[in-house]
Image 1 (cartoon, rainbow, N blue to C red):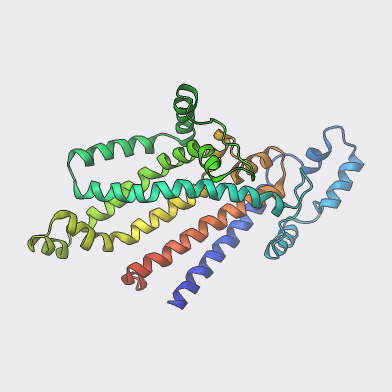
Image 2: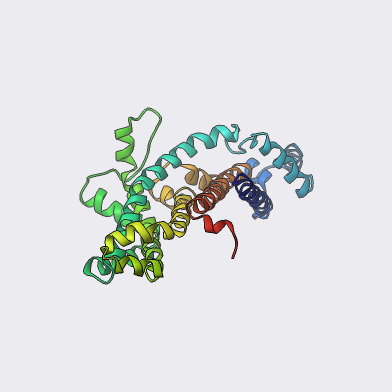
Length: 315
């Protein structure tokens, strides 16, 4: 098992290394000039040349990538070009806000999706199953920014129950924070709920035709007992995988939701950095997102193997 975890971890680190290269060279292909963005259009050629040298922009891209990667390994993401502050100091408070929002959404969405998926599989073909399938298909078909604006119009503008802007600060109590993030968390729940629900239902139904399940029915067990005792353990691996993917989405794909609700998370910070062409900050935010996504998928891979030892041996 230790060897298996080491192999999955090494594969995740190699993936992260490849993503870092794509991220660095991709951001350097963005149109515009960092020096011009910092000094303005009226800057003299001498001033532009001087700031390019001070930022190391006169060096080859591959050399700047190796230097940047070495600093990242030491925990130093550099300095923000826009604010002049260390990037770690800029990102960490925003990352805490993003994880809080994603955590609230995950606490609600994961048990709700798995529970509804199990009920839908138990009552396959019934009114509850058809109603859940229709509603989940509707939520999958609608983009998150549209869901967010509809939620704002209904719960903030029309009913006046909750604030439309999710502005938080370090001095707020937990209750106040939960009230502020209620609408963006509700939007995220609607976005990820349908994927996990449909995958749970499909995974359960895919093993319901297996011989051991038929044998359980022949013993006189009820459908709910067969699903919970015999089908669920063998369908756990794909359910864990899709839950991990959606947990990753709650952190990585939260950018649009944060922009809609003006929530001070990493996604909003990354959008602001792109508009200011603050490339070191963009690269740091992208790497944080990539590390979160790769880490969750690696963890899901290991957990899926633990719950289903047959996955240790490739077919």
